[in-house]
Image (cartoon, rainbow, N blue to C red; front, side):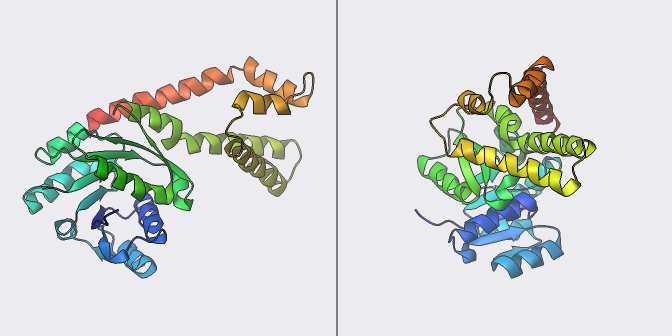
Length: 274
């Protein structure tokens, strides 16, 4: 596949994770530039990854074929307006946006009509190359450009393309935000294990390793349903059965559904804010 000149606007955690991933996968460092207002952050990126860095968004974007928007949604409007004014137009560049809650129509509005846009919703496990990224492309994005965007995101984990932009809100609830759900569940298990007499170290190891092992077991059992895997651990009348019954009696399913619905509602609200 043709290598393109990529500029990242924003060098925060997710931006750095993606840059590190693509460089680690063999992408030529001389084709990658990161622009950010934090000069110390840029210095570290330059030293660690041997890429070009600058505090000037327009200068960084002027030589790029692909612009990756890795900034917070709160600043994207001002950034895109000044970038478009500085460049004159986005031209033939492909835009890949990681800004949560910022729709393709909004990006088009901020870039004076540009429509070749791919939206992403990554999650924090991308920091260790174990992420999953939801992706949606506007109709104007070519098959080759979609393939290129997919190859870039492959460097930090799995990719899931969705059929409608509205689905990106569900992606946010299912994967973008969900690491926090699992962290919270583990936190509560660890805290109660300590209350029941284990040391903090014992509780941490038992709970986190169980979570890691369970996820790996699911990953290695693609033809086995989650219900079946759960049943294999749950002997009728046993200890696991008692715990699962308590979850059901306390309506765990409703709590999960409510949390995901709240996430989606907030994602829709954010679309109107930025």
